[in-house]
Image (cartoon, rainbow, N blue to C red):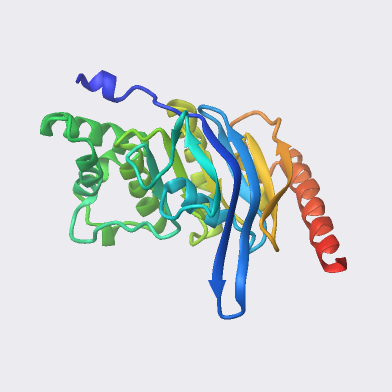
Length: 266
């Protein structure tokens, strides 16, 4: 397989159909998700928002194949998700890099998922993604030498290098300081525009969701379900401090408060 072919954009449509999930807890059974249906187009950036316990991370884990729904189904194109797969890569809040490997070797490790590549081809792919995240000059650096934002960029390069069809991001920027987060908001938008990956992004930060997403899907807890969908009609690159963006965020926040108020009343 040619290196050019390996670097081609590969995206997928994600279909979530009537998915429900119940967990056992000390207080009894907890309905994490109830009849959730969602269709995500190829190359679309979709953000899930809602309060803690609304099921958004549970849904991400189901799409990743780390758990199975009690009912309903999840499909990538026409294939049912039965478990983890190389077509879906997950980025968590903690970067989960290997401290005994340098930056380049961490990205190379992710490419072990691509057995069809030769070692020279893997090295070229790793170099490409380090360039894409702006860390080509830090290839030999140790992980402990990097800032939090740089570590997340390494984690992003490692996730993108195997060329997954879908990138799943769970509170990826939540542990970073505000200034670093704002810098990464611009960088992730630039990378998404270049690679056009299908991205499902979980966050509790509504302004972050509006800054990044083509659509924002609002969840309400008890049980976890979709309350409303917001199409974000703003040009990119977006600035999280843009008043137009803040206006969208205010509308979503008002809808969330209204849904929580209804639950309390019930």
